Image (cartoon, rainbow, N blue to C red; front, top):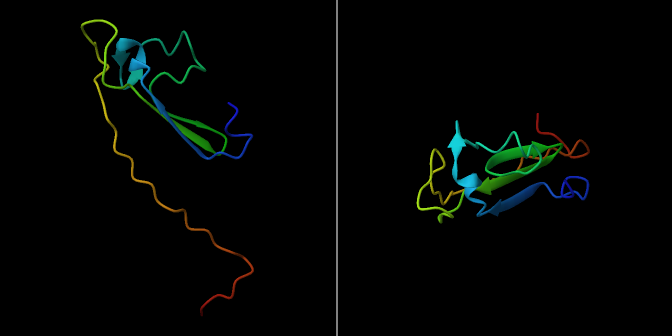
Length: 88
């Protein structure tokens, strides 16, 4: 919640294990911690955050919350300068 007002457009975070229990690609604890950013992709204003569920486990199992090592492809946004000359 600090990143967006500060102008940070992308935050990568992780290793929360998603609470070890997930459903439909989100932590089962999402309802208890709506601002907790437990697992998955979140957007707040112009900022984006991705929290990985990590590799490890607190318990000897995971339920609906698989281990992950995401590969993210970052692309530069196309920025159009309204003051630049245009080709016709």
